[in-house]
Length: 253
Image (cartoon, rainbow, N blue to C red; front, side, top):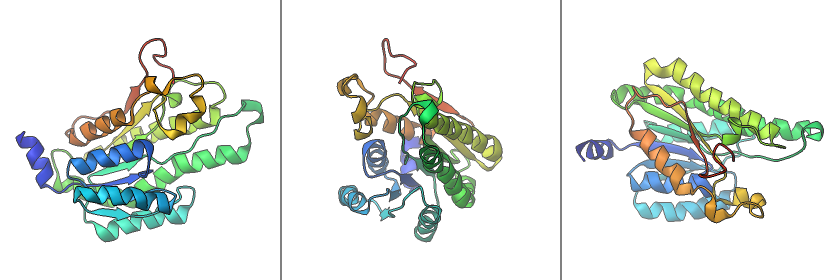
């Protein structure tokens, strides 16, 4: 209980991309309940602001920055907006992502490029822009350091048919998290990828005919993991957490 009170008293701060719906919304709600102040971002300004109305009911500080993760200028603007509003960053949550299915032989290169930009390049750039603040926060918090959590996918670990481009981008995101930890551990910055199978969000609507949404992973499950990661000491590195549906689908999406 005392450790939890100490964490609350520090006024922790998080930045969450993809924060207006689905997994990102569940994570944001969890962090606000744990007394984080936040910067939230998503592509659609109206949807993001509607979510922020609810988030502000928590009484915490909520900075709203609409940003399209396919646009480098938006990524840079998001980072600078956080730096203008806060003097720390305890937790960076990279939740924004896109995916599309298609047969390997005919998959359009432009769709491959878009997925790599949103799912890998933009997280890389955002980490670069915010790394000095993550390091500075870790120096202020010698026990927990600061954390980066990226929402990858089980398909980045175990391939699925017709998802080659998406799987490649998510595998690269897992590798990025490992590289952050290897490179920045001495600075107290630790990264974790979370790689779930199908989660019951609107992004999974396309598989509802063959997978009952009631048997999918809950967004709250992922939020719980993010919360736990944020409380780990800087000496506990968790490179990747795979979350699968139980039973026969184990180790499948």
